[in-house]
Amino acid sequence: MTTSYVAADDLPTETMPEPERQPNTTERRPRRMGNLVLSVSSTVGLIVLFTAFCEVGVRAGLWKESVLPAPSTIFPTLATLLTKGQFWEDAGRTGFEVAIAIVFGSLLGFAAGLVFWKAPLIGRIFEPYLVSFYAVPLVLFYPVMIVLVGINAMSVIILATIMAAIPMALNTAVGLNAMPPVYMKLARSLKASPGQALFAIAIPAAGPFIVAGLRLAVVYALIGAIAMEFTTAQAGLGYRIRYLYEVFDNNQMFAYIVMVLALSLILTVLLAIVERMLLRGRNL
Amino acid sequence: MEPQGIQIENVSVVFDVQAGKVTAVKDITQRVPHTSFVSIVGPSGCGKSTLLAVISGLQKASSGTVSVGGRPVTGPDPKIGVVFQEDSTLPWRTVEENVAFAMQIIGTAKDARRQRAKEAIDLVGLSGFEKSYPSQLSGGMRQRVALARTLAVQPEVVLMDEPFAALDQQTRLFLGAEVRQIWARTHQTIVFVTHDISEAILLSQQVWVMSYRPGTIIDVIDIDLPDDRDASVVSTPRFNELHNRIWGSLQAESMRGFKQQEAHEKVTT
Image (cartoon, rainbow over all chains, first blue to last red):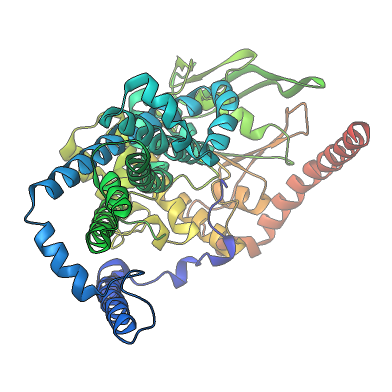
């Protein structure tokens, strides 16, 4: 861990690459741009292809309208949906719940991860529980939540926050513990303050793990919020999907499902941007 | 007594381990004169890194004192620069930012920081790589970055703990020769720990040979090779004589350490 480079890869002085070449600017950028174009165009391409497949499938009678309506029926429904106040209320509520759960879940998880690192004893006591908690479908606790806080946005937010906090805490702790010990030796030799050691060394060093934790936190917040709405809430996208399912309004239900998919797509893209900013310069 | 340089007085370091107490360093009294270059060689596990850690203030001595520039060492001090064996470049910072890092921590003003970072990068021969990230550099280049980071702080003494141990032999000799040239220009006091006899002779004015645990200095050899030597000096007869003498002192110690470790393993397994 401490010697992250391989001696065999080492270049003797004489064969050092010529500085004029500037490997990081001239050679790498075109390839990265190429990657971005490739990933965007392939994503768009796949979505178009899948939509076309669904359309053709229904028209050719491979499956019934009631199983999966044709995109040509779903999209007009979706368009009218976007003009309705109720949709925006539902989307707003879910968005609010997810946003709160992401913010508080990742902050809480991050703080817990820091504590586990700073106080290894606490980490050793609590980490196994967190790891097993990870596997528990927390939605099962909804009756408890209803008793405690009632059927409202709060119960959704609390469970989604907990679900988001767990991977964040574990990843932060793992990232900090995986940091090469020499970094803290460096901090000590320079008489760095605890704040400097934390913000200038430890947190950036654990960066890739923390970002991965954030990624999971976002996903879990979304899953938690939608699943909780499904079971307990009286509003929100998850609730609306279940409601529409119960009244057999297939077209609207799928329109809502497409919206949830769109929401997760937006979150993923935002995450990718954040990740790019936070991990700039590292070849991962 | 001359106040400059490093004065080591009766330094012992005893570690508490499960099996009892281990004396890593025993009663060492030595002096590193101001602006001189001293290497410490010894078998692995002889406590040479521990001695270096005591000089740097990262490790407390169980007894005895170390003073640098006339002031006793009570803890880490940016005036005492350390270059570690492990790769300590920070992967999220460019070469330039890595070199400026130590100055940033100790609060050097921004303008001076930029100027001195540039000088240090030039000094270690990394000009042109300022904007590169460590992941784009070889292991040897990364150790140069770490060296530049330490030099940029302009410490009174520079302590190097086997900085090139993870590199291949050729790179190690080239970097060693470069460290010597840098030292010839900056004239800082340098203590260099290594297990490589050739490296020690090539670099230093004086070589201390350390015994296996408990670590004491069993031999001090003045290296009377020309000051402007480079890696080609390894083929001269005088180099061989010095090498043989150090090897003679070391051989017995290495065997003793080897046997002790073997015996220890038999007891514990």
